[in-house]
Length: 257
Ligand code: NDP
Image 1 (tube, rainbow, N blue to C red):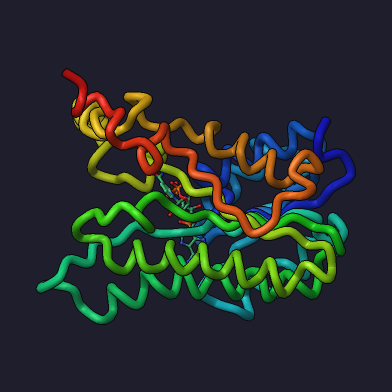
Image 2: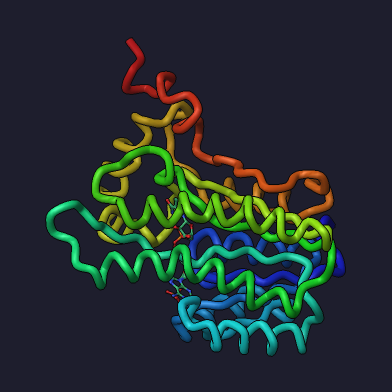
């Protein structure tokens, strides 16, 4: 087991990538504190995780609530060795019809919330810990309609590099996992019916060299690697888990003869 004796915090651990990572971490021997806003899905996730999981309601945009949850979780499971700042929301912010409220909500959750999750965790984290931030291919792909989301995720990359500098004296590593399209509830209506999901997969697969979307475990296994001692000398990096969409777009099925 690769995380025996370690304690992890995962924000947004009650759904999608966060939940897959929480389950993998528990299977690898860790004790896991998950947070989110939805009490019902948190309770369901806690049942799945068993005695080595604890689920706490904490909105990532509420600094006091986040710090209180970390305090409570670490009182039960001990100081943190791993933080996965994963909580995030989608958000369409096209030029011409975007309100300030919507734009700021995406930034406050996906960027400001990430900074304050890490800052709050600092009081409760061990030296030589691993912090992983959840980024996105949308930080670099220029996808129309995603100004706030893309800017927040590009900001997450900058945060990781700056935090890596600030935390290196404590031996704490900070890296980014940047997923491509991944099969999770974040896609909402786009995958609400089997037909919609099939069309969504086909569309995204066409622009992905490996010809498919990611499953949550493609991402969680990369997070496990970054969290583990196997990644002990990796600092300030961003790993795209996207089937080649960012690095090798010309290899996508849409360009094949
Ligand atoms: P899900 O919608 O399945 O999960 C999002 C999680 O974030 C939920 O657990 C949700 O819990 C939590 N969350 C959202 N807002 C807050 C908040 N204010 N405070 C606390 N928790 C919050 O989506 P994914 O698993 O796909 O998303 C996880 C991360 O992966 C996000 O950062 C997303 O941007 C990123 N990502 C996802 C991709 C994809 O294609 N799926 C691609 C690239 C990046 P609750 O609702 O209870 O608050």
